[in-house]
Image 1: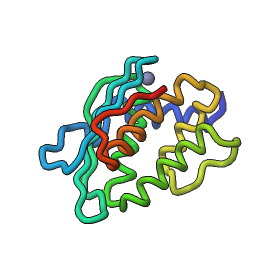
Image 2: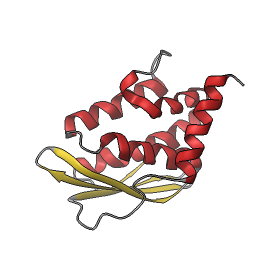
Image 3: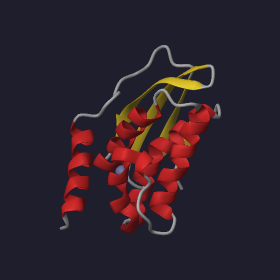
Image 4: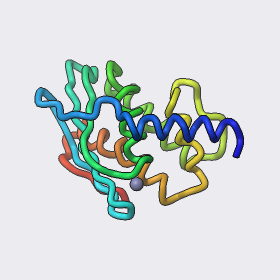
Length: 147
Ligand code: ZN
């Protein structure tokens, strides 16, 4: 195993063990539940919008290390961003996992740790689940399912 993939694995395990922003958000302005039937992941994403910016983003649910780590990193990266920026991040993550292989953009930070999943199509659904839930919440849909 290369040093980089070891580092990536460490980042994922750390977010899995100590998920950030893992709580309900009673004062949320929108939320959505996402389900990934293939793996059994369930994640609910809560967003508090102030104007166009995501002043707080949290999540709850249960799932595999990948879905949990991706949700944990997502909440940290999208908090304080505008809706447009959050959407852009979501697209960048999707591109990193499903697009042509390339160096993950620097703005993704820890999320680059998910790039190793490119070789495991089933796990890509786990990683994308929280992002689908975030997009659903922002567009007013209460739930979403990965296909
Ligand atoms: Zn999963």
